[in-house]
Image (cartoon, rainbow, N blue to C red; front, side, top):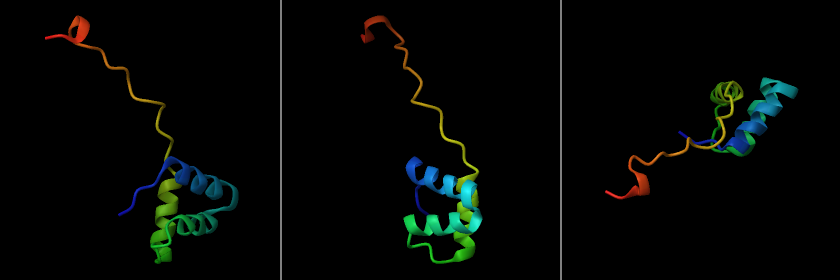
Length: 70
């Protein structure tokens, strides 16, 4: 298991769209050298390439009571 930042995902997505799946796999392995299985790396690259960026920022919080006092 590993986590991917939006910057890493964007780089992998860009390479996938511009150069194809094999290049995206190489880009993924450049960011995550611990992934040594090519089949898994290709699968992960395809999955990451299919992601859409999250919408900007969290939703605003509305206090339940005026002034935030109990």
